[in-house]
Image (cartoon, rainbow, N blue to C red; front, side, top):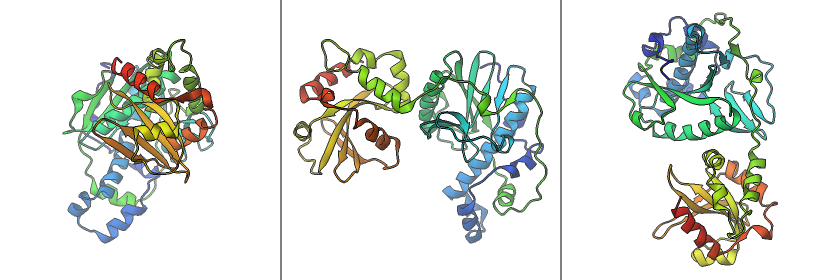
Length: 371
């Protein structure tokens, strides 16, 4: 993205012009306020994850404010989505769509669930650019999250090129690992302890919000995009996997371009269920009472796809089970997480036509090795 060169105020983290606006943002300051009352030493605070997390929250708002200024002078930027104190309070939470959530962040929701959050979004004539910001020097986790955001936006905006602008602090590692669609900007570190104290302790005089008046600044409800129905798509993929003349599972369909995007959004795609008796042949040591065993093909990393089982137990708990030759991984899944919601949705859809046996599992494993 040669058209986007880091401006000096972001590079040097110059906040004089936007400082008063930072006091208009909502902050989760309860934990850090307690910490600051107990710990007076700046050095001790800087060793705390609570302090550094809060510092990252302010850094994100600083970068967003500076991006607003940048957008006003960059002629390539045609539209810039407003959030935080700049968005209208009349924004409502809808079932589907790009919107501002209760924390004043930009999110895409489907069936009232947050599919993904974006630190900032802006448009050019031919592209959508989503922005991610972080004060962490380690970038592997951030890099991993990009795939889901990129895939979702590709589906929502099929007529636009999707790009990412990643804004980190100097000294961050793993920069070469970022995908080709990402541009990296590096700023100075944010170390203004006095500003942090003012925000935490509400020790400031509130001034009017500085706003730039320009047609390019838009609300989320002004953005038109393709509808993405999370659970309906999940069912559609499941049904399509059965459409093969020879094999129980249509692997060719799962390898299609659109499903590569879906794998990045969902992480795993369900292909059926296995009988409890067959599952206990595969894992005889499993001794919990099972209601149903769902079978998925899961994207383990950028190049590896494997069979992973999800066991819905009679006590309503959900276990993720990954069986490898010399390694069996069993993990509890969050009761309020996406996987539990997926299983609750699919258990009413999967009839006997979706039953997979051990022979089918072995065949699928062989086909997956050729991906």
